[in-house]
Amino acid sequence: MCAHLSHQSNLVIEGLHKSFPTRDSEVVALKEINLTIGEGEFVAIVGASGCGKSTLLRIVAGLENGYDGAVSLGNRPIAGPGLDRGMVFQEHRLLPWLTVEENVAFGLNGRANGERERIVREHLALVGLSDFAKAHPHQLSGGMAQRVAIARSLVNQPGLLLLDEPFGALDALTRIQMQQEILRIWEAERTTMVLVTHDIDEALYLGDRVVVMSSRPGTVKRIIHVSLPRPRDRSSYEFVQLRKEIYAEFFSEAEKPFAYAI
Image 1: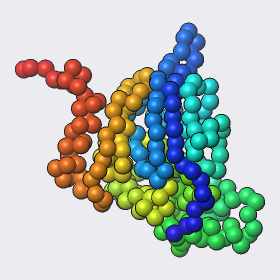
Image 2 (image 1 turned 60 degrees about the vertical axis):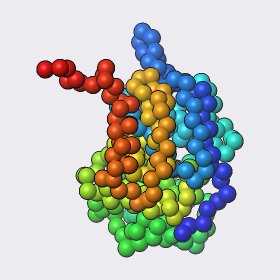
Image 3 (image 1 turned 90 degrees about the vertical axis):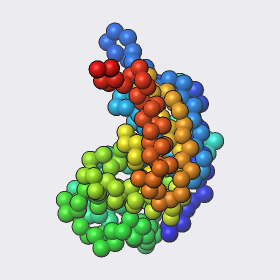
């Protein structure tokens, strides 16, 4: 297990409002978002495409500005990117000319060589890729490349890891394997994690809470606490019932397609 820095990682979002200008007016992406995520918690955010969930994650990462409201981590306002946050995108974004270990070490500037080597070695072991340290990205499967991206995001020991549809480009079997992998890493590290996904099963399998967002403008429609023990059985009655609850939030009787009497 990798040693942690003493980052406080409670995330507080208050009255967040974000809009994007268009030629004639503006598009409201997020409206009155209020959310608190505790240290060591795993929270999944689900919503339809275009509901603003990725924009929300980018604001927390410090990659978006020009919003109203307040966003803070460990009682400190977020004003831009920082080492207290890591981010994993849908594409692994590895540098193809670097080896796996060089990609993982890329953000470790200012560290002594021996310390860099130790940190990289520990994190490759954490994601189960010690034997692939000298490989290049093109020699890896999609799931392996994402594990390298996760290791790279964790080397600076962030208090908060942001996951933006990290398994969306993977096939179904690899996606399930990666869900198990990120859960294993979370249980080992207890890094606060926020996952954005449109996959309801994925959200329920991973999250302590599932935040359901409405369509544009994105608002927090409901927060569902998932108290099921881990590892979770996706076919259990309790899991299926929670899945139905979330589906009901997206498809009310008035909104259900093809819900007409015949």
